[in-house]
Every structure is written in structure tokens, then in C-alpha cells.
Amino acid sequence: MDRQTRRQMLKDYRMRKPPMGIVRIECAATGDVFFGSATDTAALINGLGFKLDAGSYPNKALQGLWNEHGAVGFSMTVEELLEYDDPAEDQTDNLEAMLDLCLESHPEASRLRK
Image (cartoon, rainbow, N blue to C red; front, side, top):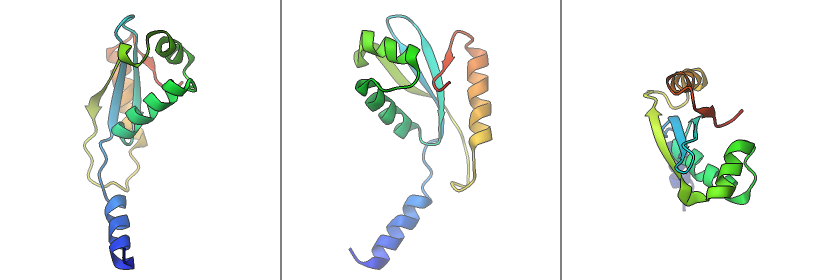
């Protein structure tokens, strides 16, 4: 790959707009629900499954449920997406506000990361 092509690919990657938003994790057997925010929802879901399978997720309640019921006992979905224009702009405050609203509307739910 030539240098110019590589530079263009890096530029394209930096300017991509990953789906930012809120992810919902639900245990089918118990009905326990967890919400988390992510700057890349697909990456969060992928990484979450990997960490839970490895037994190393820091949320002990979620890890315990995962150990008991396994991956087939859970659903992981994107609850809400954040609309934004500039991929370089920090969206942390907006994501946190969205997460707070989800938790308020689902008082039985817990934060994914404590």
C-alpha cells in the first residue's frame, strides 16, 4: 500500500461517525437490565461479550448473571442513538445525559459501569 493511500485511509477512519448512544443489556431469566453509554455502540457490545466470557467484567452483578445464564441468556441492543455532526467533538456530556434519562425511565435498571 502506498503512502498516500494509507494517509487517506487513516483520515477516513478518523472522520467516520460511529454509532454513539446507549446500550441495553438484559438477562432473559431474571429480567435484570443494565444500561451503558458508548462512543461506539458496536465496539461496546463486542468488547462486553468478550470480557464477560473471560470472566473479567468489573460489574460483579452482571458478571455473576452471565456466569449463571451464559451468553444465550442475554440480549444486547442499542436502546438509543445520539445524533451528532462532528466526529471530533466530545460527546461525553450528551451521552451521560442520555444515560441518566434511560435510568430515570427504567428505575429497576442499573448502570453498566459503576
